Length: 347
Image (cartoon, rainbow, N blue to C red):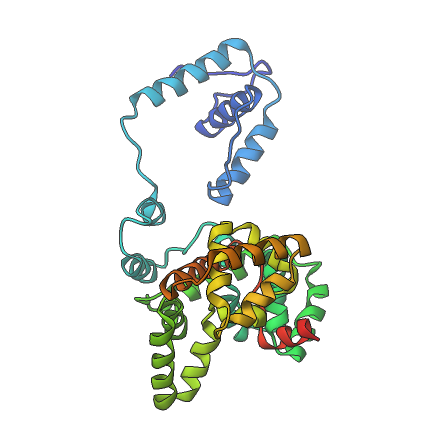
């Protein structure tokens, strides 16, 4: 390419300066550029180059643009740069254990933006991470996650530790972005170094989920057997289970109208009819007592008119209501109460 000069008699343009010109052209055309993936030293170099150029003539600009377009046309295919880029491109294609092993062997960062991955962790996972960190690091983690999740974590912590971390948050006001990024990268690396697990949920959650969808007779028999083998495990499983009969103990009365709106009325009538005179009668009454009197009376009339409900139909309808509650819980539309919260709600 022939020698280029600016209007001010500037020496021949370097490749870095040509790159700065192209970036400026794209920005002037309204193109949204995200250069944050570039190494920081290149971002600095680009900034300095743009700052050094005052103006260039039309001929120089046209020549730089034409050279850039010619280079683009000569490119047949691009590949992600380095192992980090390759691992990102193959995410979801190769197994998590393979990806983790490669990252560990060559020291490739787990995520270019580690906080995105950390923020996606469940409250229990974040609490496990924070257990081994100082109050100051825990305060940074709490400050970076969404407020509802931070509140949930703080509420589940031992009160003394929660107070210390809350106090430590005030000391994060002067922390620089690089330190926060370093903390995030360190935590993400720790998480990636843990062995890949075959199951994402623990034994309690898996058994609880299975028993949630099991017939009541079978569920009670399994729980009795667990009680004989391991009473502690059995108690944890009982807490993980949520059935129609648990509604009075685990649902805030104020959420009942929301739940009944999410369920087909015919399903609701069948479930309420099946609950009458049985072990789930209390749950049925709880639902009726916490909705409008007009709606409750209408449902009572429909329950009376439908007559006796087959146990199979009743169990299926109750299961549909429980499934709707679980979906709402997963979407963050309601929270299942703990034993302590249930006592406060009933008080």
